[in-house]
Length: 402
Image 1 (cartoon, rainbow, N blue to C red):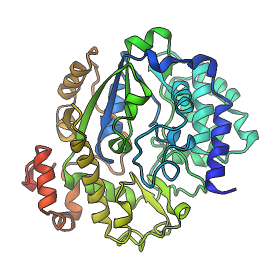
Image 2: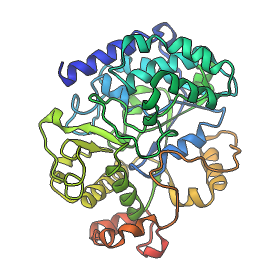
Image 3: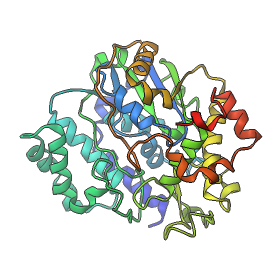
Image 4: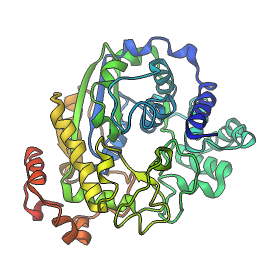
């Protein structure tokens, strides 16, 4: 079975579990949508985690990217990159989103958790055996009924997957290699959020928050998905040095961020500092796939990562959409203050939290982590880099690049 046939098979399995009767024309009832536009390794997972704490927000457990893949919208189906302008199989995309979407709750909703895991596991382990898959309802009931959500999730994953629970973000110690033949969701994998299913009132009264770095190449898609909604954009930014360093860490990780198997399009990567260092370095592209990716397959890893940063933000800036810029550096320094600015912008109640969670990190957070590659990163500076940094309101003084 080739890749496209395998993806179609995954969609068919997932579609069997969708409560189509519940979806209807729900997307036309949505009044408020917020999209976080950003580059990879800029902190969007952390920001979304904070926003999802709000009872005023509806959210997906992960990103919408897997749903675009199995509905043949994403690379290599509808585009030669992560960019596409028109949604194919729109109702299928909406059905998948509707099944996943929910609102934060303190309750343990066994039915919602079961449906979420039945959908999520097929995106994470598309080749899972039928007998193992059939265990999900029983294991959810056994593991979550007598535990809090985190303990139930730990017990569920260990019971269902054993050692492969190491693929998940909060289990991941950076020592577990990704070896799956077929990839839909990009690891490290997410777990379903502790949320309840949508109600009729939610369509008009909640803010639906979405974030996927690849959305920077697809501005206008959410207007197609939610034609009656007011779409607000948040432009989440981070300086080039910190972003490039974070991207390089991810590219060199044995565990995560495997985005595209380039064998599918008969392309061999020859990225210096990556292909020659990693056993998977000839075929696995990591993070977003910019429209000009074919021009970078023989560049250095630092140049590839810089291109990802520049392409993402240039596409956002050139789109002309109204947006609120949030600097990730400021979010880390003053999380409560910046979060209040965001909730005011979205028109929702303030979110209370004591400290930021750790989400999708490759190392323990620290200032000036990019200094470990200081010379290599400083060599990337060019007129184009300076122009974009200026346009994003960043100083070119390295002392400010925390």
